[in-house]
Image 1: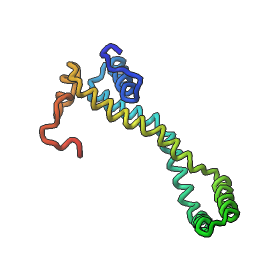
Image 2: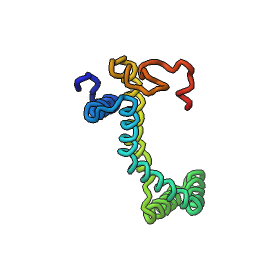
Image 3: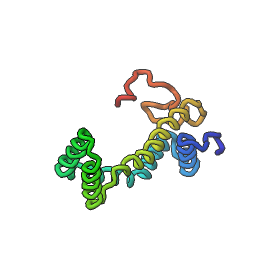
Image 4: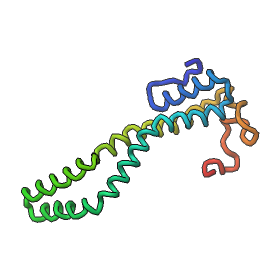
Length: 157
């Protein structure tokens, strides 16, 4: 809070966490930035792992779900609401049996997207502020963290 970087946005919380790491450890900002990215990736790691497991389970269920989805499409095309409801119930039953909820994928995205956008936008606005500590706490190949890359290679490295 001493540097005025904190705000109640994902980017502000990210900058605040970097400031806490910098003040608490005394590390140069280059390493603080790397530590902050690692910290926030670890925070969303359970959500990422859960999402991967759900995706793998859905992939495994695809051979069983495909005929049911074809039934649903056929019932829609015929306008047969009873067959549509029966096929949809089969699909729900199959997913319930394997403990898969397709809406949870969206919930996990709602967790991960603000964190990743906050990380990007927080770092971007932090290094655009031209704070004095950022100008002198880089590494040998990049001593000034507020300067743009003169060679244009760091964004793809």
